[in-house]
Image (tube, rainbow, N blue to C red; front, side, top):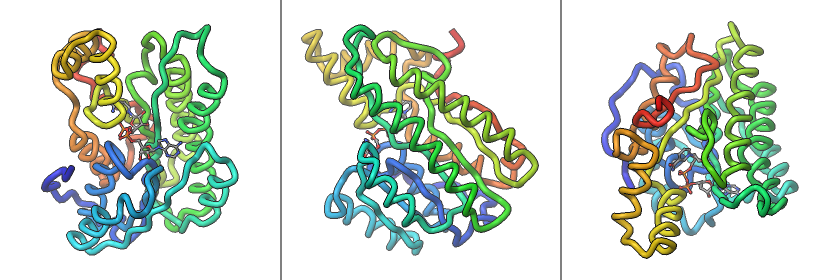
Length: 267
Ligand code: NAD
């Protein structure tokens, strides 16, 4: 999905530099990647998909924007492969920790392997990428943006690992914000509510099947339960917020947890 035209922000401070966007083969990460490319920022992309699966859309984005794009097909649950990916990364000035997945189960039945996977993906990987970023960033201006969730601020049933990891990611962002304050690097969390991406579409499909209702009915139920605006947050809304945080106007925003949740966490 193309996120359409993106308003030019005063982004020249990152022109021709590199941004790493994890989990950028689909959904929110791909939307952020497009927005950054449209601001002339080179991209290091990563996802579970093979190079062949993403080749066409990456080629289109390259042709549209003229930026350089690397794609790494890496499963972060494989610690050796993650380490290899980490060592191969070129220096970058923007880091977007976005890769993620969901697994639901009551606490008493939650498989330990799934707990470990979700903590690895949502917390340990961002921690290691932040360490690497701070050691090798090329200039004295940098942006670290962690895609947390409303589940970094409040809980929902059956999401113990996701909620714990996303709360942890907000704690990590705040600590990094304090440690980097005044250095030109900022670190913030973005906390979306429901966004219609493959991650949420799977949850809608599961619900439709379980309750024997249509996909449309399951979508409405999902929104009505949690998101007072009763509309999905758009991928492009998140991408625009990332651009704002990367603009010079974002220089003194650090340690913040910014919600795009239609009022979810105000209840
Ligand atoms: P998505 O399923 O479209 O994208 C997830 C990305 O993560 C993909 O690129 C996938 O390849 C990658 N990924 C998944 N498992 C991986 C693994 N083991 N190793 C490496 N990469 C892996 O989902 P999305 O909705 O775009 O989610 C992106 C981020 O936004 C996630 O961190 C998610 O928790 C967060 N988020 C999503 C929503 C929502 O409603 N969609 C709401 C709040 C937060």
